[in-house]
Image 1: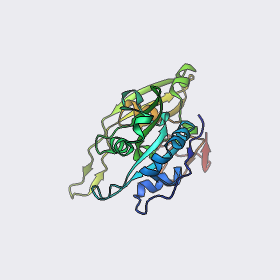
Image 2: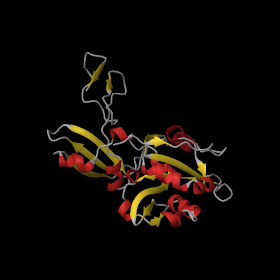
Image 3: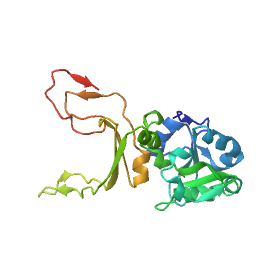
Image 4: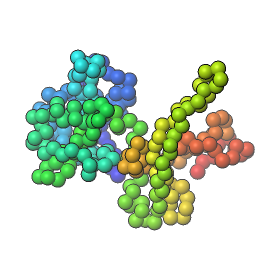
Length: 239
């Protein structure tokens, strides 16, 4: 998959939430809604080519913080077939409304943008981009299955958490989630993904890079799972 590129955008608003700052580091500063409307054709073409553009709408008067959306390639959307659709020409003059529809808490959803009825890009809540695997590590589900790989889906009910008799936190809560696990044709582990829906788990299905098992606590692999053995003589084991 072609590497997603950051947008050459204007400076972000002065007040930026910590989570948004992480997105700026990855994709570049945000532009305002008016600038996005003025340069709409340019940003849409950039998204079609793999560039993410962050769009900030000042909602500090009503929410106390700015609302950020992102104009993204379609592969950043977990389930585009079930999302609202806007023709590009209609979305431009109503861009503020489209941003609100994508980011409104708690029922915001990705907005698909079409040209001649063909989906081309999407507008999503910027925070949904956090923790997406890098493009180079994501597993292409269709191609992976055609090559003989298998993908299993699980539902993890999570854990409500617990406290000691003294009221101290004994186990942190674990949210409910769907988990997708990929195995190569020979049965070896290929990767895994997690999300609030099956579509999101598949979107986040990724193949970790060659990584290191540490001989020092905490012992874990690239997915955060405990290492199966802890008595290896080498300081690290690469696989």
